[in-house]
Length: 324
Image (cartoon, rainbow, N blue to C red; front, side, top):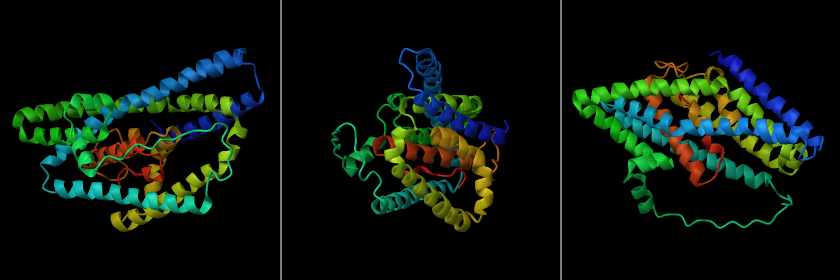
């Protein structure tokens, strides 16, 4: 797959979908018109929803198999504990920095100030569980239910335990690890298949969104959008550039250049976890990471990020660069 062409096609699809959707909204077509009924609410809507469903389809199998393979490969490594602590510590540190950065910028710019919402809404905050309960809930009592429900924290624990158990089971464990490696290759092919149709899916989603809302509908939220982009840019260009330069010893420009195709797919579809594998072909990816380290670190990062998004709110902390 030519990733430069994929990046270009996704960006073209985003712009084309935005323009066509905005024009369709500006035309103010009747709800029973052919374009509105069979194209916007029909063909394009179906295409977008099928694309989203396909993305969700890959979450659990990709994360679970990648993490089992990564944990299994690292389980016999004498530095597994250090690698695991460094990985979790890095994600927690970048999350904390992102939260501080986002709150600071939000308090300065006050996005949404003066916006008149069309409908009054009520929000009832859920009671936060105690630390003890959080720790208990991390360990699954039913791993099958955790996989079915997409409970990522429990999936992480189960996958890591399974990976460690494989290395301790001798020849039987080697057979399972070989099978998991084959499953990982198959799932990576699914990722490649989905990436090939990503421009079409993005195009359908953009047309459906802007045909219904139009550009004028987001004018009141433009400050919020720019605020999010500003924080994302600061976190990405400042925080990660410093980490890459001083912790990894790599030129940030070189790193970002090699990361561009992955970022384009992730940002255009808002599905960072599907890109966690970096290079689905295996071996050493363009960032120079060994596959066993890559699988373990990126799978843990994707799960950490997914769990935060589901249980709290989507924020700029989600920019965890693969291979860092």
